[in-house]
Image 1 (cartoon, helix red, strand yellow):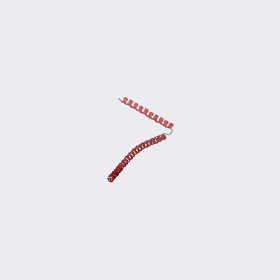
Image 2 (cartoon, rainbow, N blue to C red):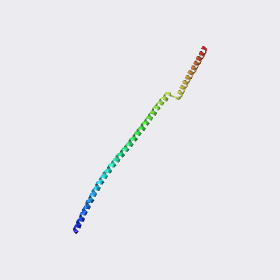
Image 3 (tube, rainbow, N blue to C red):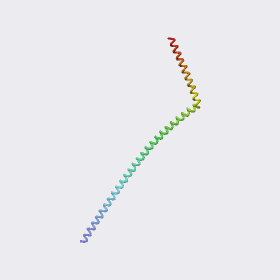
Image 4 (cartoon, helix red, strand yellow):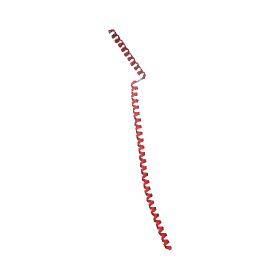
Length: 131
């Protein structure tokens, strides 16, 4: 009778060890599956993050390139304007001479206008006399 009790206890113990080993194996497989899934998710998130960062960098580069192009265009226009006005100033020479030249031109234009007015007045008086 003692032997049968010992045998029963031994079988029960073996069954418990078997169940524990089976449960441990099942838990190990589940842990491995969860670890693999978590690793895959973290790789996906890392890839998504890298893609987002790459897109942000690309957008920033495009914006920066446009800004640089706009600044270069503006600088080029300013440079052309500078050269144009510089050439104009060089052609004008001394400001006093330029003022004297402009006075002469204005006097000449004024004289031509006065002559044209006199001619017009003469023409009008000739037309009135002809009537």
